[in-house]
Length: 158
Image 1 (cartoon, rainbow, N blue to C red):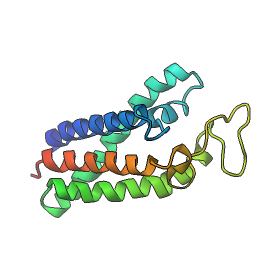
Image 2 (image 1 turned 135 degrees about the vertical axis):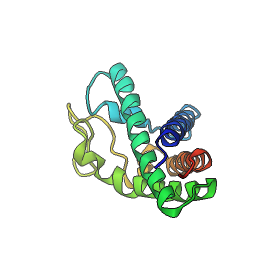
Image 3 (image 1 turned 180 degrees about the horizontal axis):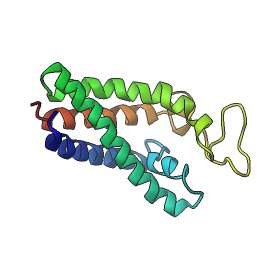
């Protein structure tokens, strides 16, 4: 395992993913704000939630990048196209599985079955996060594929 390469490429890839996600939201392609959703797990304060969520998203991105690096090591090579393929699988898993279970784990998110309450005001993502806009899955795929491309391009297998 090439630890220095993982630390640097994982950080850069996570910053790219977070920036593309924020750009997609800012341009109106999606209403989803993952750092905000993550931050509201820890606090109901909207401003602090953005900070906590950004730090959580940075840590999670680095964690996922470690998984990518381990896959690159097991394949014996990295490469942007391998990263793009893993990013596609990662985005699919996030959209189909992670967003489906999120309402059950998030203390401030309503579920599909039980609407909002005074404590659970966040809208649930719905299937493939479509509740946040019809272009949300596209934004998720693009950001995760770019995450994989950056990792694959910059990570050097030992």
